[in-house]
Image (cartoon, rainbow, N blue to C red; front, side, top):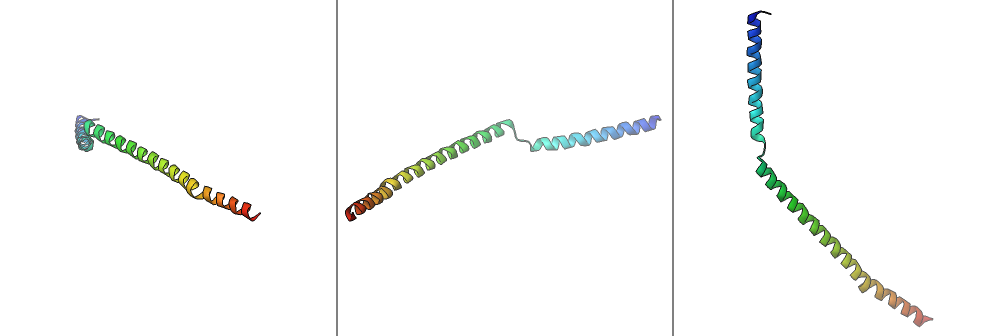
Length: 89
């Protein structure tokens, strides 16, 4: 290889490195700062915990409603049916 060819290769390498560094700097600008990431993560964690509590409350209410239905509707119907059967016999 001649000195000119080596010089061209070095210039090409420098240009490639400059382009690559420019791309890296551009991509770094798109990244979130750690403080922003931490704040968003904490807010998301609080939101998930809140949703979990709401789901547990909804499940508890559903269970209470089911128990009420059994005690308010099913048990009286069964009692009346038994009373009618006993009255008929």
